[in-house]
Length: 225
Image 1 (cartoon, helix red, strand yellow):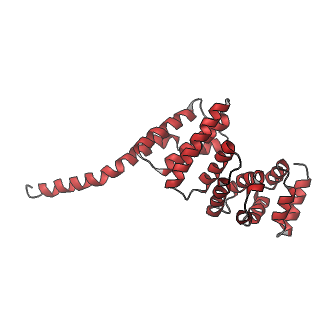
Image 2: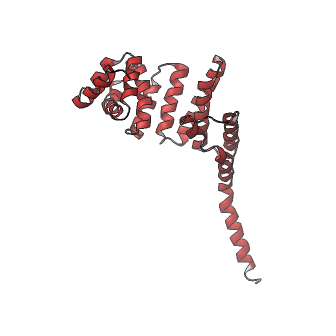
Image 3: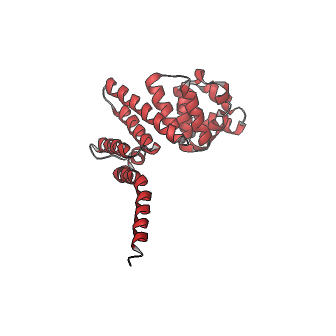
């Protein structure tokens, strides 16, 4: 038994060395676990208990003191974007948007393969700073990472249609397929977005390469929805 003691002690020491580096991540994960579905619930229109959004925000900030993970920053940025939309005062909205841009930028620097976060960054920057050149870069990255994700297609096109004069030719080259995808998955939403932005000419140009999609779009656009 005495001969085994050094081996057992050494094994425990090695185990401790392996556990220590991941311990902060474990604690951070435990802190945010009760709030992991918050953003999904918001997207689905679920009514959250009063104060729950603030609790989730606080939990993420505390978790961030334990682990500087990209997904924590991205989730916090998403919550700040929601807070900006719900803000009643202009000053509160501006502050929430600034925080959303900062957190999303930090998160994407650590976890760049996040197409939804790039879209959210484009939304936050446009809401805070207007149509600036960086928006095209964010939309382009979101599109290239998730070209066919139907839940992202229309939000990206909403921004693109509103910022059309500022878009470069390189990004416009990949938009025809996005318009076709929107016709296939959300034709009514596309028609409404085109009407809101007075962008019928642009939509027709983007769909010209596919007569079938152009005809389907025209029917929906001219009908009452």
